Image 1 (cartoon, rainbow, N blue to C red):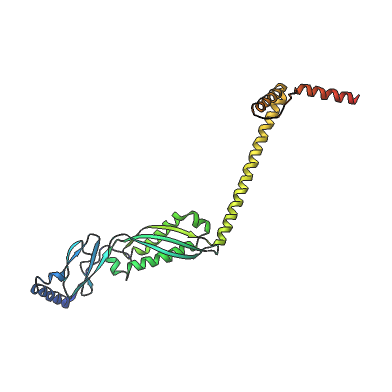
Image 2 (image 1 turned 135 degrees about the horizontal axis):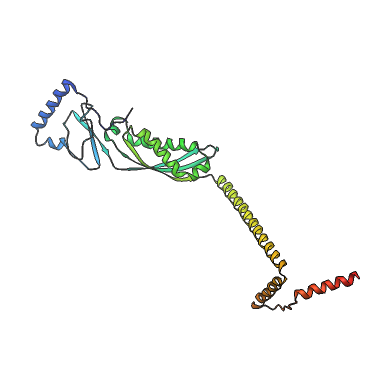
Length: 274
């Protein structure tokens, strides 16, 4: 069934025409008292759908402004066109991982076609709200926990599209869907916290190992440079002494030239071998 903005007016027959004429005569005879029952003021945010002898009159909703209703043979239904907010109650959803989650959501919808919302469904608001609850459960039931936590916007958009496919026939337009909160079981929260802590520890170890690797490469390059130039090692030794001397410390340092130590060790080994 395809939704339509224009509904055709059906004939009421000869008996209906006779009753209509009699109703008009009654209104004329009882003037001006009949005006209190026949004239309806429709606000800007409302529309009325009039039925004459049970048949749709005019093919579309009336309003806003003054509308005329014949007594006895016509009745009407008021429809509010303002956006309605519905807070979906917390739903227990069994996801693919056999975990039960409690999910809260909210939808914003409005009546787009007042005539369709009266003619095509018994209660458009209640039907939309009930459909939102079942759609939320069906969409989340086919997903994993990681997808639900990380893809809230995508889930909300998918849910909105699914709702509009059905509610378009009812004259309802779903404007927005928001996933408010996802409640995890306490045991699952502890397990996820332990997993996250272990993951952070593993990343820290990898980073530390990478730093050690880079530091060792830099030290190797520095050692190669100092090996090529012995004076560089002596300058580095003197710079280290300068840094130590600037600090307030009770340590007494006796600088010994590295060349002297090397020569002393060399002479010691020569005498020992002899």
